Amino acid sequence: MSNSVHQNPQSLVSDDEQPQRSSPTRRVAAYHSDLELMERSQAFLDVMKQVDRVSDSSLPVLLTGEPGAGKQLVACAIHQRSPRRDQPFVAIHCGVVPPEAVAITLFGTPDRPSLWEKVDGGTLFLDEITEIDSSLQSKLLRVLQQGEINRAGFEDPQKVNVRVIAASNRDLEQEVAAGRFRYDLFQALRALSIVLPPLQTIDISGAFGYDQSFGEDWVTLSEIEGRYVARVLNYTGGNKQAAARILSVDRKTLDRMIKRHHIIYPHARHRAKASAGS
Image 1 (tube, rainbow, N blue to C red):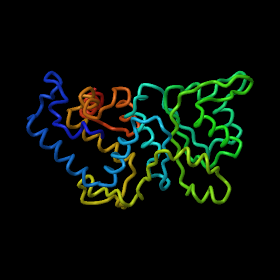
Image 2: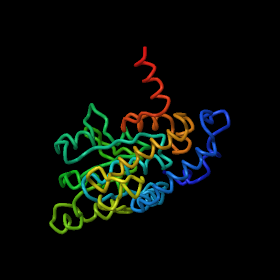
Image 3: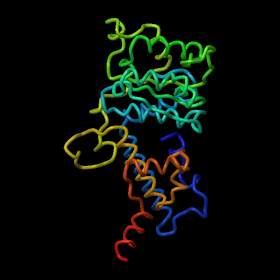
Image 4: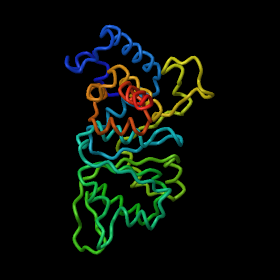
């Protein structure tokens, strides 16, 4: 997913980690074949290039696109490729959580730390940012402009170091024109921006070489991630350490990917068969 996956995979896996059950030459050929298939999904690659472009910055990022286009996945990818990768990544859906709960969560109470303090040093993903009310918009603007919050019950402002990634399914320019969203906050949030492609531009048959499209000719970025991780695990013979190196993620992140996408990789299949036979 990062540029490292385009390197020769043999250079990323040490000799003692190489699977011994089949020919290395055959494995390399199959792996590169998978990459060639994946590269046909130009829309996906374009998004990942933009992710790499914004990752090293601490400026806010605004993600826009259709519902289900994978905004949280992209936000997480930005965090994982950033210098903040070892710090917290927290997502909050502003359209699901009641406004008063959003205010308490973000800015705390005299007895409860704010989310900014908990995420300090990391990344905060605010999904459906247009759903927050005007009072919270002004507080959020202050965080972006001054890097500090006024926690409830405290007189002195507190410095925080949190990167904000915001997302919306709506057209923010229209929200600004209608008076529902602050223009200055909109400008601050879109210091960097990524527009996610329409779902139909991500072609499952082109990206993965399938003859049928399971009733639709597109998948979300999350589904692409799951299929790609599964291919890498198959390439490494289920060696998670080697797969994590190829994917440029740590083992914990890989374990979360495996769990999130319900991936059954070679070693797991062997254990499942052994358990069934006992």
